[in-house]
Length: 448
Image (tube, rainbow, N blue to C red; front, top):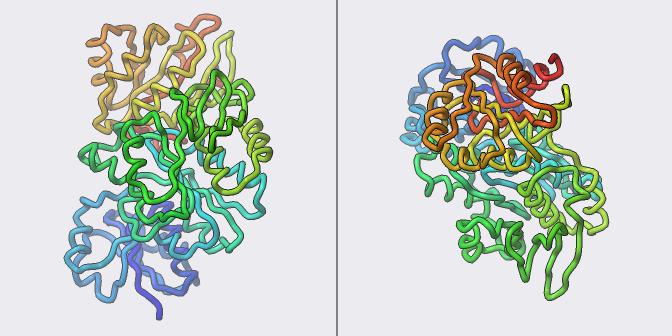
């Protein structure tokens, strides 16, 4: 018997979810609170695909007649007014990844954490593709899970990057292998408290059982403690501690200690990725692949060949002896700290953007003499400048747009310096998304 499903949000995620629901024979009511959208244009996208209608503006109880389920896009807060209406009518709310999981088959590897998700997901995906015939890489990395779920088979492998927003409304979502890379303050404007944010991240494991695996960062005290409460098999990785069981660094060598046997896997000098945080991402991906029964020789080859993900400490160009790096995906202070640490020499930093109510003290402290100048953009520029001044860093300039920021950096940079875009803030307000911000930065660099 077909269901009537309300899909909340008409962005990329909502469109993909709607299309998948129609393919399964269910009815879609696409809802968006923005009543300025064009109903006809939205409907035209689904012409001939099944029973589809559009609802815009305020959601009323009478609009929910016959609705069995709501699928909510990750960008929509559960504090949105229409969510209260759904709750009053006792209509279940699923995330887009929960909907996809409900229909998907095969093995699922799911990765969350504050930072490193995209790199780890992309790398894990490449390892899986080197061994398995049918691999899908989905989620927050750019391809909605619902876009691929119906293509999966019992023999396929899906690698999914999962955000905290997507985890808020899961029910029986259960990865065969999960990973939580780290948890540092982020999205507190939505999750309100650090406790809530931590609980949401940890919920990726809530339906896992003894036959499943969970990869955790031993260096994160929250995750180290959490490991003792997880129902699945726990595998730790660490870039700072020597682990008797798990993956760690011995000097420059990534090793695996397992049941009293040491295995040297790969030297960090063989990697094409910069920085200790990327060594952690590599360890997490290796651990996931081992749990997914991929042979170590296949893993090593894929890891050696893997290059940095676009917008994540991505090398752009060298101009007049200055190297430019794009870290537009550094959308919070902790990610930006890792990018600064990864720079091999004196750095001029472009930062600032939308205010997610982050604190910037630890990030400014991490400059440690390496950052020569900081060029600030966007809504947070005064807030960051004030924080920098409190920590004695006063080499701060403002720019009105990315072109001006890159030009200023070029004029102040010396031969051998590095220019790094790592904003520590979201892109909204000046750019549609972090990808657009990164593309504009790269274009400005190439035009120097």
